[in-house]
Length: 159
Image 1 (cartoon, rainbow, N blue to C red):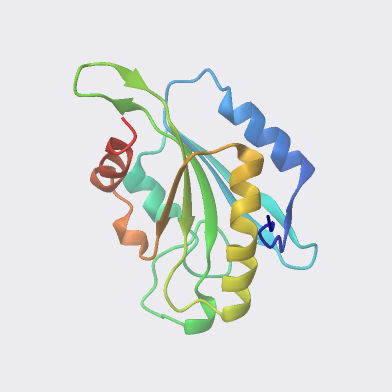
Image 2: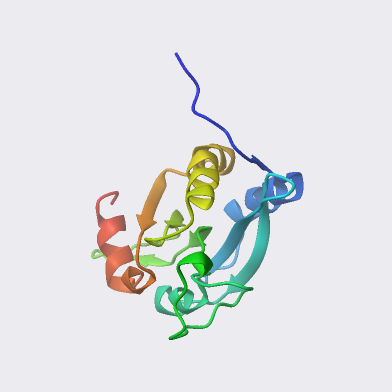
């Protein structure tokens, strides 16, 4: 059986942060946004957000350089598109009234990213998902797709 390609490892401090995030006691939505440190070839923490809705998270996604939080800009540049990894704890209200807090892995992969970025992120995604022990894995190509409705639809498959 062949193993999948691992381009970047996960930083040790991030592994610990993800473990603590999994067992957090808070009942609000929260996100850990991660990026790849190209020079160190490591997935590292970029930002932590508390009390953030899917629609607010969309506005924080790193779609354009140079730094988080990324602001929408009409100055689109092919070379400034940016991929990212997100682990999102979402307060999910079931139709029968129950509440659960699924951890979702969201891979933001905008169309038009540089090939080098595409390979680094694609080659690191599985390692990160395994390290964080996540089962709800979603990909978005357009940050505008990340809405509460989209997330509820995706999570409905699991519940």
